[in-house]
Length: 186
Image: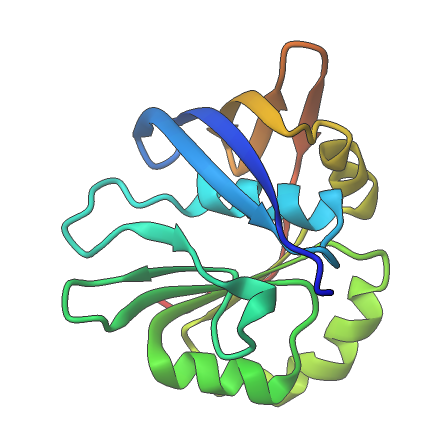
């Protein structure tokens, strides 16, 4: 018998001073049986950090993720179904990043494992022809602290300023300082 996804609910109050994006968002997160709290919370962080200022070019949504290998973790699709922003987590391979770049206007990777420097050093020179690709490292200690905030029902305040995210719940808070390994060309 196959295990089913665990449903988590999150109420996010987002204040992104860098991009002037503010609002309250109710999220229903289907956590795959093989997904860790850390990975799920990185998805929530990715949502908050890449939420578009408006929905003129579509909404940012969680995809089927681990349940469908042809989809990213999050994506923003316009009304025609074209992918505006493709967001990956972890350490995707070169082929996947090339395909994502061919299918979307922007590609962002959030890597959070302690092995990120090793993964990136093997991939960096192979991706020089992907101008739409941005790669960020979430320091492992910070992603672990973020995972500790995971609950079945969460209320999180997320403030983003100067590229850093400050996430707090009723019982704890975490500072996330993403490190740019590669920025997309404008």
